[in-house]
Length: 422
Image 1 (spheres, rainbow, N blue to C red):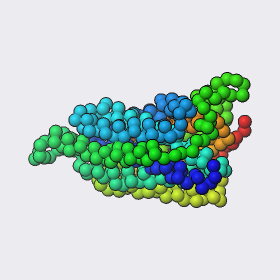
Image 2 (cartoon, rainbow, N blue to C red; image 1 turned 90 degrees about the vertical axis):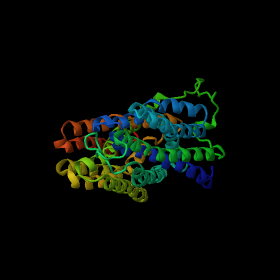
Image 3 (cartoon, rainbow, N blue to C red; image 1 turned 90 degrees about the horizontal axis):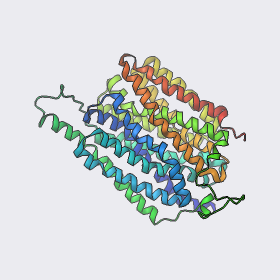
Image 4 (spheres, one colour; image 1 turned 135 degrees about the vertical axis):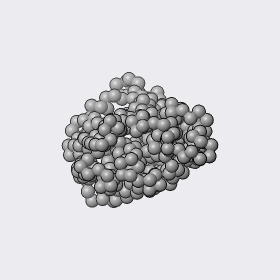
């Protein structure tokens, strides 16, 4: 393909980064909201993240097999429709008002988004020169940052009312009493997901009528054979023999867990430990995601002059220090430190992803599947952080030792783990 033919495919794929960012970055708001509507503590509500990110561990390999047999485009369209169905399920869930129903919905939405992410990340890395892949993927992930900012600054305000009552603190003259309050808070969750579902359906229609180039092993038929006469594998576990991919999977596991641990508990931290009202907390959450977005843009520009692995190492070291600030001071100082952490987290995921896929050739889809599976770190490390925060609220700040350890692994990957030595 000639260079100018990449523009439209890249523009369409960039839209996907925007969409799954809205979905995943509504989770911190939903954790705060479900603590109200389902009467949960911090640790119980953190399983919202588990339900969502568990799909990223279960489905990447089947999804990679699906796309290898059919195409990136087929996987993207199927994922968009599945995620849209999940968003529309918030309407019957508002009638049930059961926590398990919401967990099932998040799992369905995440499965659809997993299709998008498994397809989009490697697609961006191969649509252009290999030496500019990290910069190109960081640019794509800038749209992810934009979606995160919109979810945090605007959609969160549609959900959170600013009131957080318990059965004991609800005013006696509240119209309709406790049931009316819970129904009002439950209904507030429907509109953002309706907007998301309609947007997903619209983008799916665009993809149906768009022509995307076939890449790599997509150009071969499903009956293709390898040079030794054996039928080509739908998923190649042999890709893990590459040490830079293995370390990439490990680094992605810890990065995702550390990032989500901070993200998912950000509103809880603001309201419970920094003493901010919900409307102020959502504004800070918006600033938090704005810092992430700016970090992506600035980081993408800096990669023109600096090696991606060097920036990864520097940014990871900065976040280790900033996590230390949160642990030592907590309160509002810790909150401002988290804004800086968001900035320095910005380039880590796409940089690690692109470095790990370097030189994999026809094994790119399989490598991408394992890297996406590493997102399962989101399904366990935030819960560990929430557990430490919940067991002793007087020393809640020690919980941020968990993301600090996570960033140590990212620093190692930027130092040595990225090297292609096999």
